[in-house]
Image 1: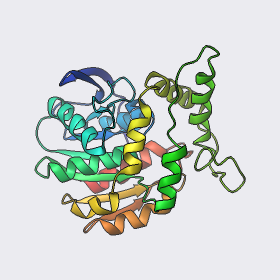
Image 2: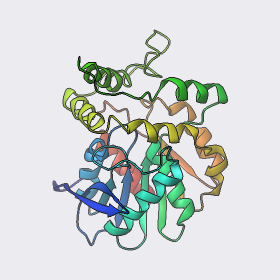
Image 3: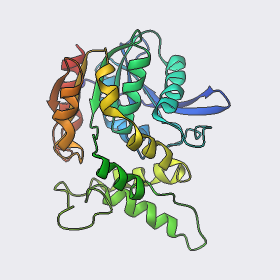
Length: 281
């Protein structure tokens, strides 16, 4: 369990002509862990884990993916996961000294995987938290429907579109399958969390879809076997990607796996940090 609260600080690093926003916490002398968030949203959604891990002595560095949160969009018209990984790594190089442990959730897991493959000398251990291995039919469906472009309009319907997009991700899978068959069991998160989630997506509304689509297109089955770092695959039963959990672990050489607590567990962050630290130690 954590021993003391820590302060999360924020900042920006220049990467080429763009800026990457980040959150960081903990002692600069603590062993570093880099945390890459899911899409959509930003490192804001990782604040619970950032606080828990930094209170245990970790130096935590969590950038916003290019085109998400407060980070500028990637300059490529159609960025790939490799593009996003290169930008993230350029920010990590400025925020972290020496080798680091690496955590990625959903889209962040794909980005983390590519960083680990490209920089085996820098990534000490890798944590993949939720990853989808879609069939060709599933991939086509999510590319067509999941990450739609949302633009401002005079009637402000974009505000409600983003609200329902963020809310319904917790109720249905995919979020647009609003049927009894698509219903997820966990229910809605805390309203403050949901509000913060919506605000982060609104800030990047014009560009959030690029990282989503990059993750949906990414050839994960081909890339996962190339990971050299010791890896653990984790996932909560509340996660819409839980059905792919063991399959992801089976593709990575010598990977271990562990199930995380339910998202609505009041001690979710502490229990998850126990699992992560058990692997990283």
